[in-house]
Length: 146
Length: 124
Picture 1 (cartoon, each protein chain N blue to C red):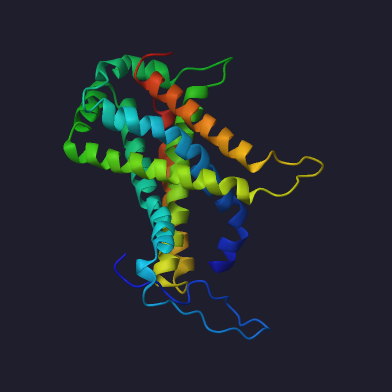
Picture 2: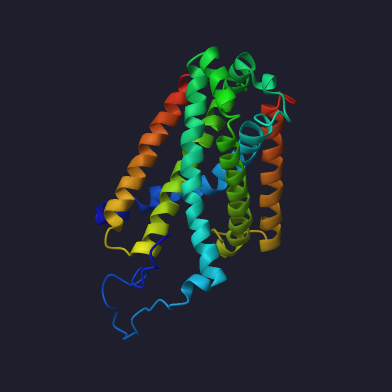
């Protein structure tokens, strides 16, 4: 994020009928907490890319045999990998908290005759699902269940 | 390329949406245990030795390879969240002129990664 934000990034491809002032990025944009959080949310995409490809490599090593799997698990003990995963965990929690807060607001008022539950119910339900799945995945990987 | 991306928008948004929702939900436990707790020795890595990892990741329920399906989702979906959000970040910081090319490259990376991920799961 070295360069300044592009002031035309959200401009429509063709000018509309209504005259509007050209979009301008204020010079103080970088100091606004809202745009920083917004860009940080997008930037977690880089972490998701890296976690995804690393997970593919890890599972690939499982298919390559016991020696490759053992070596892969040993390699993950490298402090750089651990630090990366700590950053990845923080990113995933940040995405979950922000996305779950936005999700109820993005629901349509009705899908056919069915109306979605109230926002707080959806919000709480997402947390229950997330924490529940995290517990099941963690306990399964740790050998406590299954 | 811009027209193609617009036509594929529903598919791209579907994969992005599942990446941010299901990907996040599945990744949290994976990162916590495999990326942090096992390397630090807080959870014994022997609990996921080769034999048990094979059993766990090939477990099925009523003939449905549920573990492999979940693992494939864990490997593939985050790539689509990553591609779409990196594209969005680059539009915000660099403008939309190069977006069709950047978007195409990012989604191609996600497609190649998805094939690799499914291949890795099938190879267990």
